[in-house]
Image (tube, rainbow, N blue to C red; front, side, top):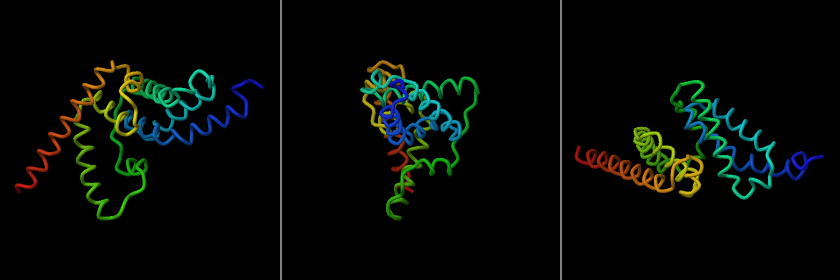
Length: 178
C-alpha cells in the first residue's frame, strides 16, 4: 500500500473535503458563474488532492487547493468561452444560514447593493476582494493564487474597496435626500 492509499491519507483528504468544499465551491461558482460547473471543478480539485503527496502540500493546503481550483476554473472558462450569472436561488444555496428576520432584511438589502457594486468592478479586483474577505487569505497567499504581485494585490484591494465605499455611500446619501 502506497502512502497515497493509506488510511491516514484518506482521512486527511476527507478532512480537507469537509473543511474546504463549501468555500472552494463558492469561489469556483463566482469565477465560473455556474454552480454546476463549480461543483465539477471542485471535484476535480479534490481528485488531484487524492493523487498528491501530502508532505509536499500539507503546510499550505488552503493555498494549494484554491490555486488548483482557480486554474481549473480558468481552464473551463477558456474552453467554454461563456459567462453566465448565478441565479438568485444558486446564490442562496451557497450562503450560510440567515440571522434574525429584521437583521436579515437589512443585511440582505445592503448585501445585494454591495454585490451589485462588486460586479461592476474589474474582474481582477473582484477576485482579490473575494479571496481576501470571503476566504480570509493573506496578500501573499492571494498573490500566489492569482499570479499577481503582492504589491499589485494590495493596490487592487485598496482600489476596489475605495470604489465600493464611494459608490455605496454615494448611493445611500442620494436615498437619504429623497
